[in-house]
Image 1 (cartoon, rainbow, N blue to C red):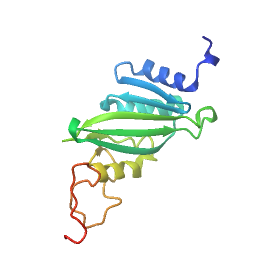
Image 2 (tube, helix red, strand yellow):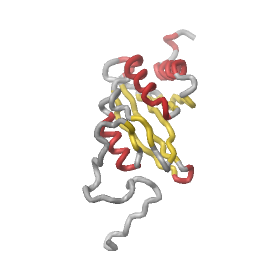
Image 3 (cartoon, rainbow, N blue to C red):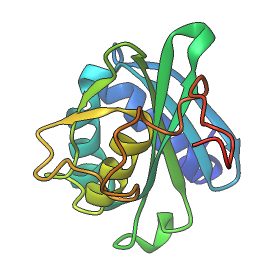
Image 4 (cartoon, rainbow, N blue to C red):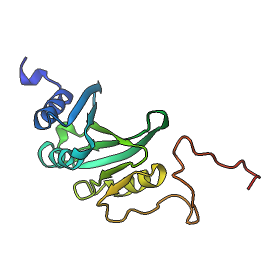
Length: 164
């Protein structure tokens, strides 16, 4: 098969798998313009740096958390995109990793993708994920007097309105 017959999604997956054969656990071309890459959490900075410096994925469009209390894990998803390379600016690579729910900690990617700054703060506040090395990891959305647990965890119970 010639290089021109391989989709940009497959090329991106192949480049990541070639560079990180042990860290990439699973890949999937979800549909045109969307790829999911499951990776070992300890490799986030190396993968982000490679994607930014070598592949042209120059920003994070968002970071999300997914709480799975039955599996005792929190998934973190990074949605990486490109402004600088027109040939991939419609491609989103979803980097996905699992963290233990009792200590959800991962290295910050703000030093690589500055656009991750507020997304990491939101994921920290809503899911309790600690982004080590973040320059300003503090609350972003909840009220200043919020003392409770991260509000997006599925097993959190809130008082009924009027029962406070």
